[in-house]
Picture 1 (tube, helix red, strand yellow):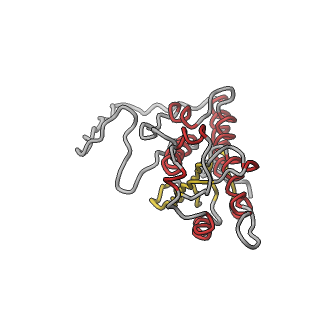
Picture 2: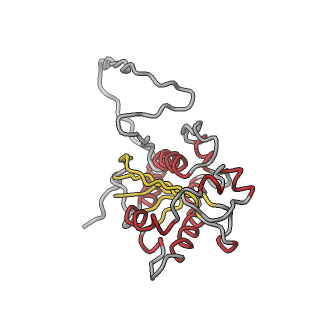
Picture 3: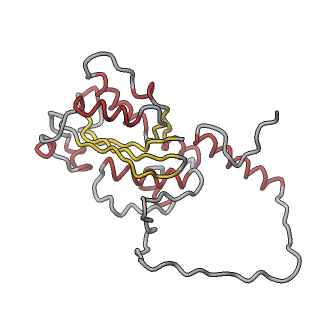
Length: 242
């Protein structure tokens, strides 16, 4: 299964006020593995950012004036995401802005959500953690994902962080860069190989503890949440009867 973790930065909050996308960041995941392929572009919006938005991302109009406009990167972007499932935190915002950019292209083009399935991790988090804060920073804290690199919001760095959060939310799999593991918060990086500890097997008959009915029900509910997030049946669920 191919998924694209996607984030954008914009000049403001409303497309109806003429606000534009100024950064797109995408991280590819295939079969729950971060592949190392990314799509990342800054864009010239031909306008200023609102003060509140500028305080979030720090991308000034002068800084972006040297970057391409969306029509110059649209074909490459749409080719990168086509057919994948988009995983986005607060998907309605990012998809709405990208669809507004697509509508400005010459000719007829289908909206982004016609090209891709969309999974909203904010909606998923609210279902899994009702009544709790479910911002990306809050989820990083909840799932012990390191977001210390995030001084300002940026589309690519936020997409990388969301990839870690999404994998933790949907099964505990930690994302890995190619050839590099990310340390947990509060842990340093070490070049030394970890020591291998072997536990001696105790003598005697192995005791088997059967799960209770309540434990089995909780397990099935957890597998159902994984299947829903993955867009299909979970591999750990029993296959349907023939």
